[in-house]
Image 1 (cartoon, rainbow, N blue to C red):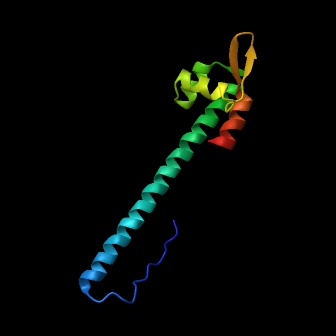
Image 2 (image 1 turned 60 degrees about the horizontal axis):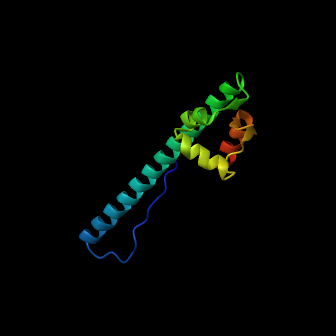
Image 3 (image 1 turned 90 degrees about the vertical axis):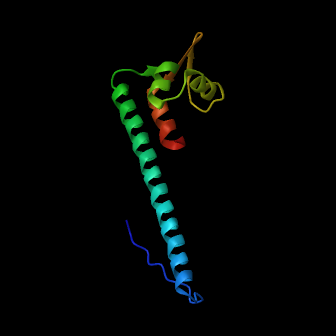
Amino acid sequence: MSRNIITLPTDLNSKSEILEYCKIARELISNIESKEKQRLAVESEKHKEINSLHSIAKIKSFLTLEEVGEILRLSKSKIYSLVTSGEIPSKKFGRVIRISVSELIGWLETNY
C-alpha cells in the first residue's frame, strides 16, 4: 500500500484545531483502508467462485438453477429471476432450464 502525505492547512491556529484535523484525517484513512479490505474480500470471493466453476466445467457442461444458487450463494428463485430477465444466459431443454458452465463463467467475469 502506498503512503500518501497529508499536509496540514496553513489556517489552523491552535493545537486543538490541529488535533481535530488529525483526528478527521485518521478517520478518513481508516475508512479508506476498510473499504479496500472489503473490496479485496469481494474480489477473493469472486475468484473462488470462478475457480470452482472451472473445476466443475471439467466434469459438467450444464448446471441446474439449484447448483448455480449454491455456487453463487443465492436462492433458486433469485437465480430463476436472473435467468428469466436474461441477465444470466441459459438454455431450455423442453421445460428444464440449464445454465452453461462456460457461459456462466463469462457472465461472472464481465458482470460480477
